[in-house]
Structure formats: structure tokens, C-alpha cells
Length: 411
Image (cartoon, rainbow, N blue to C red; front, top):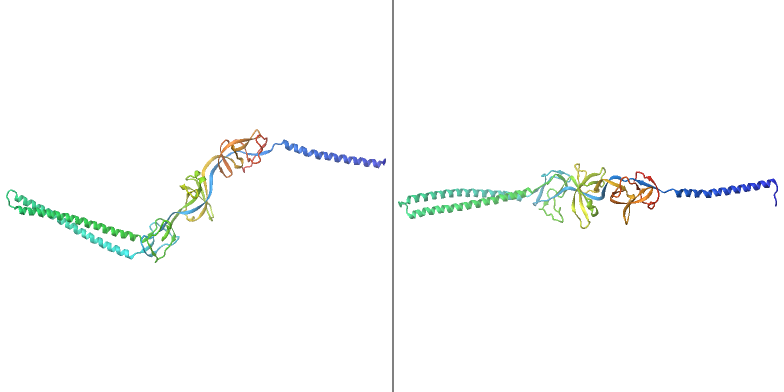
């Protein structure tokens, strides 16, 4: 059918125009993505870089610890008897030499009186022996003088008979013998006095043990007895060291903090290493200290080494028996060259980082030391001026062209 009217021609033109517009639009939409993809393909990937920086690093260890008194003593009875007086209670502060309790031992008091009487008797016997010795010495001198006179009278004139002269010499010999006996008696009496005096001192010493005294300035941590209790002489054993003790006294002006260092960390441990102690349930600022000493042996069962930190405790805010968390800084290095831990990789060839050379990824072999607070110490292979890719995760292969950008300070 032919449409020859003017109106038909106008309709045909409109239809053709709309179709052409649609075709142009489709062509532009098809062409636009290819232009974007071409731009992306030509743009190198962006990577963040950081500069190595100096920092303090240390081998850190978090472990549990127990607080103990600097000194602790279980006090026992040396003698058996009844407690006549108990002068302290738990929590009391005591001074060295202060009497804590008194044991009543009346039979020992009587023994002391008897020993003193015996000593006086022996001293009297010694005095008599000394006087007898002086008498015998004088008798010997007299007999010697008489013998000498008789000998002079008898020389050449025979005024003294031989019998008389023999008798004089015999008397002198007897006097000498008596002198020897007197000396022996004096020595025996002196020995008896020494024995009696030692007995008196022994009983006095035992009586001194009837007073239980504090061995040092401290606090009474345990009181096991009351007035009137019968106490026996010490019965402590290696397995039950405090069995039978009357009191326990602790010195707490300084507190010992004991922790265990694992075998792998032992080579880094030194006396003087900084330590932070946080007692459990303790509100307030943590306590700063240093490693004071360690046992220099590992427990064969746990492979840990006992380590001690001494804390000054003048206000007695810390108590023996507390638990605590301890943070040790071992093998501290004050000016170590470090990079973020995420920037360091490791494979069969060793440790490495990625750097940027002529805007291309380059692998750089390094040697590392300690790792601390998200940073790794670099001991060789890297300078402070070398830019390092902030993280090896997702880094393109070496020689890939990239666009470097400075990373945030979080690295």
C-alpha cells in the first residue's frame, strides 16, 4: 500500500530519526567501558611505603607471679612447759628481740637454784684446796731449810747423826709429796667449779628459751597458741617445717616477687632487667622494679627458672601470698632499627622486605632480631633511608611497576 500523503512522509521520517538515535546511544554505551578499562590497565597499582625508624625494643615476657615476705620465721619452743603469757596477736608489728610469749617451767627454775648451790660448794672446795696448797708449799720450804741446816751442822764435826739427817731428808721428801697432792686437789676442785659453772650457764640458757622473741622487725602473720597451752620442744621436720610452731613472723618492708621464666627466654634474662608488677585485685598504679636475682638453674619438671624481683613496701600495701602479673623487659635495645612486622616476610631463602627501586618492586634480604610491639628489629641489610613496602600481603611480584605512597603513622 502506498502512502503518498504528506502526513505519511512525516511519520516515516520520525521513525527513522528515532532508530538512528538509539543506535548512536548503544554505540556510546558500548564504547565507554572499554575506555575505562583501558585507563585502569595503563595505571600501575598503588603500594604504601614506610621508612625504617629507630625505637627501643626488648624481649618481653608476660607471666604470673607470687608475692612472698622478704624474711619469714616460724618460732618454736626450745623447752616444754605451759604458756604463762602471750603478748602479741596476728597483725601486730614487733621489733627484733621483743618478747612474744613466756613459757613457765618451774622445775627448771629449781634446777638452776640447785646448780648455783652446787657451784658455790665447788667454789668453797676450791678455796680450801688453794689454802692447803699454800700450807704445803710453806711446809716444803720449812723442811728444805731444816735439812740444809742439819747438813751444815753435820759437816766435819759430826754434831748430827746420820739417822737424824736421814729423817730430816725424809721429812722434806714427804712435804714435797704432800705439795703434789695439794696441787692435784686444787686442779680437781678447779675443774669441778668449771663443770658446775657450765651447768648453771646451761640451765640459764634453757631458761632464756622460755621467752619466745622476735628474730627481726616484722609483723606477726600467724599465732598458733593461747595462754595456758602446753607446748612441747620443737618437732619441726623437713616435710612439715611449721608443725608445732607458736608464731610466724614476716618481714614485709620489702616484698619478694617470684615468677618463672621459660627456657626459651632464659638466655635473654639479666639482673637489672626492668619489670612491671600488677598485683591481682589491686587498684592503682603498677609497681616498677627490676630483676634482683634468679636461681641459675631450671626446674627439671617445668624447664622454668625461678626469678625474683624485690619491691620496696614501706607502706605495707603489698602482702605475702598475693598473685600478680609480671611484665619483664629482657635484652632491652635502646636504638634499634625497626620496621613493621607486617613488612617482613620469610621463605626458604631467609627473611626479606620489599622496597621500591625506580618505581618497581624489589626484594631485599635482611637479618632480623627482636620483635616488640608490632615491630621487628633489622640487624643487617637495611638502612634508615631505604623505603620499605608497609606490608608484604598482596604485593605484586618483583619488578612490577607500582605507584608508591607514604603510609599512615600507624605503621
